[in-house]
Length: 248
Image 1 (cartoon, rainbow, N blue to C red):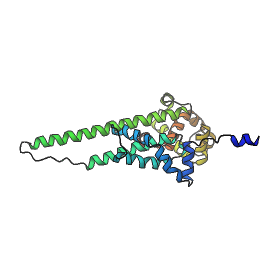
Image 2: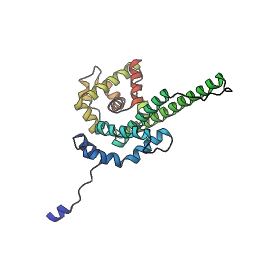
Image 3: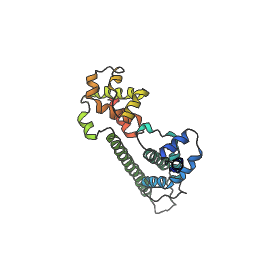
Image 4: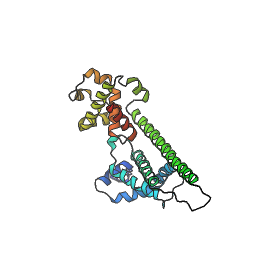
């Protein structure tokens, strides 16, 4: 019997469990994980740059740093896997790098007596437009990726975008109250844990923190859950939406 116990295979450690060990001080695992996921990093960076990325490229180094940052900042409470979180962070850091490079980039022309000032300005203007177009397209892709990630997260709570459209508060003040309720929920650790672990809104406890009725909380339950999930995640564009609602 004991022999059978000793022969039992040890359960394979998941990526998220390895990251938890690193965050607790087992830093020897860090290089091993980063090295194993270099293909993932390169693929993610390539998706932003629209070209094959070599490990010698500056953009790959940015991705590497971002993945290392993801290891340090990852929290399973946010409802996503490390790779999903890492992908968002890598894309964001690479785009920031590209933007910075495009702002610092200067266009030099060899002197040519046949090149008129208007021609020079035209080339410069066209280059500026191409950079703006690139930035616009990459932002669109990041926005789409963020929405798709959020959509997958909602399914864990048996919610969909259609639910949000149908159950969003109709009036601006009601939306603001729901968002503030979501914010208070996230700020209270015990309530946040109920939401993230039990996948339900702790209405009774939340009712004690807000100035709206239990009936209102129940009516806006789906919307409050969605806003709370945005608050607990690294969604840049969706957080801009919340900011816009609060400022109106």
